[in-house]
Length: 381
Ligand code: GMT
Image (tube, rainbow, N blue to C red; front, side, top):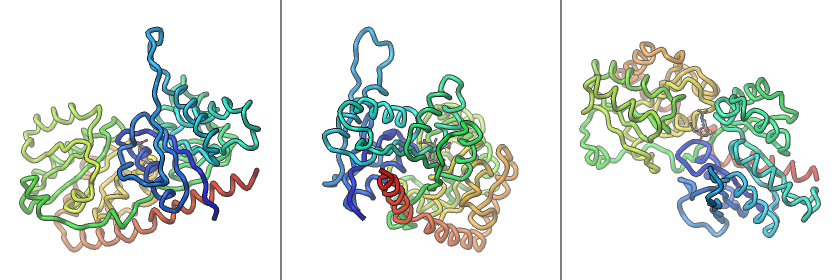
């Protein structure tokens, strides 16, 4: 396979789309491709230096006349500039807005400079809320539709998201499903006693949740479920991440009188040590296109109690890797969580099944799919 020059435009913030885009870029760089990241700040998982990775921070022009800074235009201009002098083969936009739209604009900016046929191929990966939340907004619908239709290739992270996109946008483009992935050489269970010491924990069971605390994550349900769990077990809840629902969650924790049983740990990047001591993960989301945090937990042998929403049923088998209940079914999720926390043999069986299931979503396998996808588009020239 020839080496390519690939631009990746993504969100730098704590969340699944930025994580997947960055891990994809890092894996492509290890395979010898040159990868050019475009984002507002360094993506949170970018980490170590690599000779094949280049990071272009998008600087937005501030001028008193502009009420809101023009990030989308600055991004388009940056992509066009780098694509032209580095002769990028592919620009891969993660999340329709603004990335796919800006990449589309970048191609227009280059129209006079390079023949369309020689311009980069635009691949857009839909991650979820770009369709189900942002895309559902009337003011954004046409922009999202145009960005999809003007891409050379469109992928979605689950079959569920593909169907939702077809229903909502009736796109002209074929959508290919390439699911989320996990590097099991990084995400594996290796419990360290010092982590318990650092957190002041003894041998209690650990319930964990990791997200950006947006409304779709139903943080209130997590607190309610954990409150019920705490009445019947000595478990501690670790909440990793931060976001708009954090304050509300803290209020609930205080109201339930479980302050000493819940830890708000903030936006930690190195989550493997925490997943390694966790017994179950709670993901009661009411919408979830895939659920990368759940897959990463499974790779660390952590069974998941989640909802049947969105893409969860595509990789979590009810009763095998944890349990899937209806969104809002607090009683059901509590019951299943307590079952896993109290029946060690059952937990162990689920934990081992989770590790095996995660291996089917190994980074190397899915990165190969993206590479082949780029190759096919470039061969169409
Ligand atoms: O989950 C989030 O809120 C973050 C969001 C993002 O765009 O960063 O994640 C979305 O993309 C992830 C990676 O493809 C998926 O695993 C998440 O399921 C998806 N989130 C939602 O659909 C709510």
